[in-house]
Length: 446
Ligand code: ASP
Image (cartoon, rainbow, N blue to C red; front, side, top):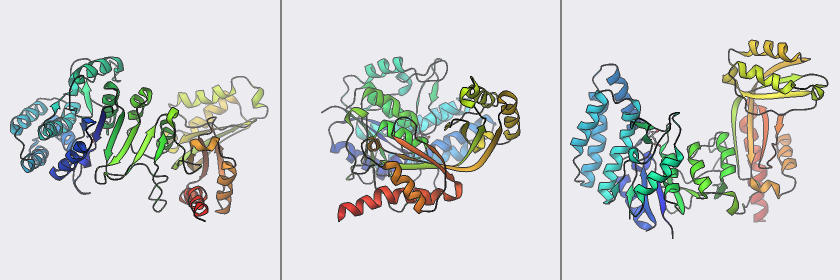
């Protein structure tokens, strides 16, 4: 078999007991040869993440204040892990060096990256595996974007021929040789980059949930787990708020054709969710894969008779948005109507100016902004093959007494988006779930 890259999130490495679980998991499968750790996360809901403590150190150092308190808390977290596991590395020397660099103005990225760096050192010592510093192998370009080519070749060369390695998550190196971090939650991205660099057969992302669920558990009670989802479906679901992975962690593995497996460190017996690429997709027992949604959108509705024959109309509407620095989400349109869906907060304080500008540029019959819209995406690769999916969806919403204010099906037949009143959001999600999952299960049972 090939190499498996296993990334462990902050809660999976929050204390010595979790380190022991991680080691057991790694040793269970000889293909798990590279591990990407996050910084220690919360041990309970009132605890602090080490990364947040490091950001606090940086802020206080920059303000000329003493960093005794947050740095003391950080040091005791690492000391507890090292002493409980009986590690031999010189942690005090490492901590002193990190503290000095933060106090000398190392900056936010340097400070934040030390959470992963130190956890990586501890884990490498505990496992007896090689420690690889991503500052030597993951590179950003002048614009701060990942330099894929350079990273691929340097990281590939650094890892080539190693039996086992620990590569801390979350950071790399900028064009001046300084530490630079990804955005928050970025260890997921490191894992995906490492998986691509070594041509892994699988990228395992170990966290504290057993994969993705078909709906938000705060809305639907005990939703079914998703066993298999394609990268395209996941993109649609996570865009709508279903978050399991950092969004940018999809790209490196997707283009390399490497599946990702979301697993639960506290329940390694559960298979989790496989995120696969389209060519290898597996049949789903349901016509849909998942439901996700968000409240607080607004529709900018523009109407003008004979709009379809007027050259440049749409461009001018969008120009008005662009001038105000507003990006839009969807654009469902009719013959004489055009509507643009935006997040409520991006037009806050700009509504009047926007309406005036659209009137000036487009001379519409009417232009109105309707607020309080929730969007719900019903996603499923199986939709192409099954008949009557939309009929079932709209029937379910009708039976639940929910008025659909907008429909957008895009061109992929992968996703049907409906817009409903904010107040109907939860009921609509439950109605769709009942129609596609609960009813399906009941019918299969009889
Ligand atoms: N430790 C970083 C954060 O808290 C990165 C990560 O955990 O993925 O955002």
